[in-house]
Each structure stands twice: as C-alpha cells, then as structure tokens.
Image (cartoon, rainbow, N blue to C red; front, side):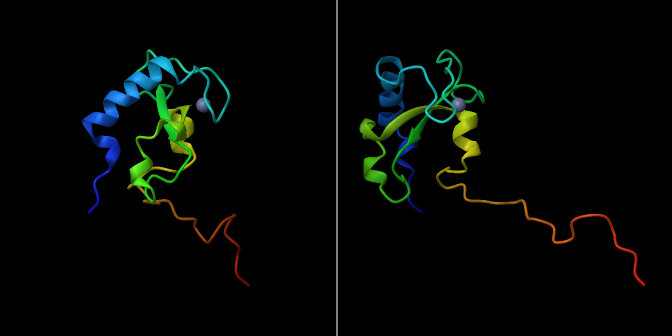
Length: 102
Ligand SMILES: [Zn+2]
C-alpha cells in the first residue's frame, strides 16, 4: 500500500552522511560501541533507530532530529520494524510436563 520512505534514494544518501558525520558511535539501546565499518545488514552493524513511529509519521522519516544510532540487532530485538508486524511465534498453551490423568 504505502511506500516506505526509507527505501528511497534520498534516504539512503542521507543515512550515509548522517552515519559518517552525526551519528556518533554508541548504540542508543545497549550503550555499546557500533562499528560503522560493518554493513547495515550485519547484526552488529549500524542502523537507524527512529524515535518517532515512522508508520504513523512517514513525513518525518527523513528528519535526522529523530534519528538515533543503534545496532541492527538491538533495533530489531525491540520489535519495531516498519511493515513487518508479523509475529509468527505463538505461545503454546500447554507448558510444563504432561500431567498424568486419573
Ligand atoms: Zn546495541
């Protein structure tokens, strides 16, 4: 339906510049250093954490005031990924060892 603004060329260019100049080198989630030489696809690579909900405010996706640096892994483990609200895992209702019936 809607286009994720973060897939655009403008965003990619801005992201690169932001990482190089303004992002710092500390993950905003775990507080550890981020190796910015790693690929953005590496789990410990740099990724942008948006402090706003991009799904609700796509027009702010390119506003670097709302950007924070984080590891890809930390970012995704928080569970906030645009267009990927799939929660495949379901809790099994039967936890614990099988109970023998009378
Ligand atoms: Zn982190």
